[in-house]
Amino acid sequence: NQLQRATQQTLEYARSVETLTAQTGLSTQSASAFTLASQQLGINTDTVQEALRTFSDRLGRATGLFGEPTKGSKDMARAMKELGISTLDANGNVRSLEDLLPEIFDGFQKLGPGIKATAVATALFGQRADEMIPLLIRGSANIEDMRKRAADLGLVLTPERTDNLRDLTV
Image 1 (cartoon, rainbow, N blue to C red):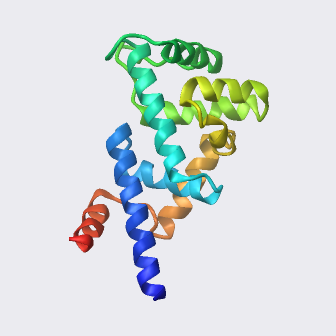
Image 2 (image 1 turned 90 degrees about the vertical axis):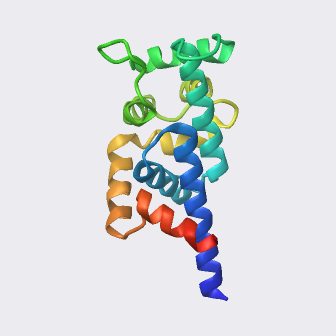
Image 3 (image 1 turned 45 degrees about the horizontal axis):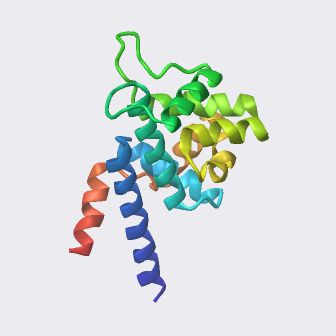
């Protein structure tokens, strides 16, 4: 029964990572590390997925990549400016979430917890952003340390591991 429960939890974790990767374009390794860091802080995986999906949508609209700008995407553009982060690279291309997240974490670390951090987080990540603040204010170095520890323990998924776990459910 314990083995069955552990297997089920591993499969749920792999599905969460796979969904996050598909929705955001994060690498499997980054998505798994981000998921693990969130879980360690008691942040629900669905919250993380929803927040990053909202961010991706707002980023696309704010930069003209797809869709018309909305109030949320305009608020997001102001919040990124508040954090001192450009959403475009030197060639005018939209930067990836993978590239932006470390700067976002460092920006929130400088802001610290409080009303301003909550307002900026909401502009970036939507309604459930307040639940993300414990993760956001840790800064990118802390997230990278968590990723390295998880990798050392073999907990960071690679595309191959994800495929192997998916094969278990077939």
